[in-house]
Image 1 (cartoon, one colour):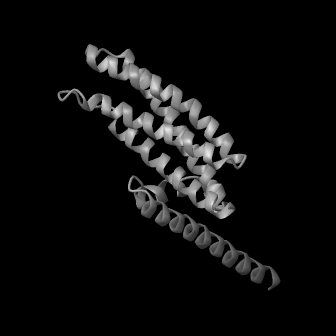
Image 2 (spheres, helix red, strand yellow):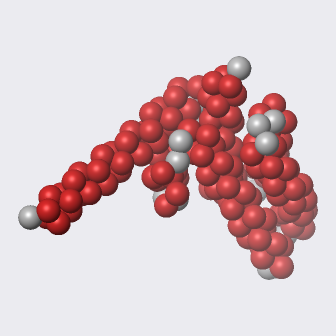
Image 3 (cartoon, rainbow, N blue to C red):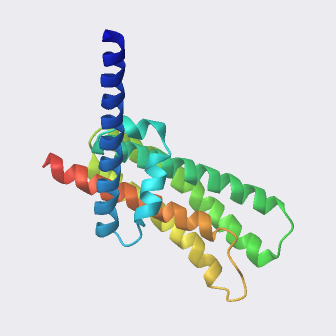
Length: 180
C-alpha cells in the first residue's frame, strides 16, 4: 500500500515537473517571439524541447541550451559548406560558398566565446558575439541573393542560424534584465 502511494505521488510529481518545464519553455518562447520578429514560436519550442536537459532548466539554463543549439547549427553548417565546396559547381557559387565558409568559421569562434561569456554573466559581451553570428548567416545568404540567377543551397541552414541566434539574444535580454 505504501509503495503504491509513493509510486502515485512520484508519478504526479513527475507529471508536475514535465508540465512546469513545458510551461517555462513555452512562456519563454512566447516572450522571445514577441521581442524578436526573427523568432518563430513553434521553432523555438520545438528546438528547446528537443534537448533533454531543457526539462530541468530555468530560464538561464534555457539560454545556455539555446546558445549550444546555435553552436551545433553553426558547426554543422560549416561542415556542410565544406562538403559543398568539394563538389563541382560554378565559380560564382564556389566563391560564395568560400565566403560563407569563412563567415561560419568566424561564427564558430564567436559562438564559443558567447557561451563562455554567458556562463560568466557577461551578457552584453554574449549579446554582441551572438549578434555577429546572426550577421554571418545573413551575410552568407545575402551573398547568394546578389546574383539573381543563383539559388542559395544554404537558405534553411542560414535561417535556422538566424532564428536560433534570435532565441539566444532574447533569452539573454530576459536574463540580463532580471539581474539588473
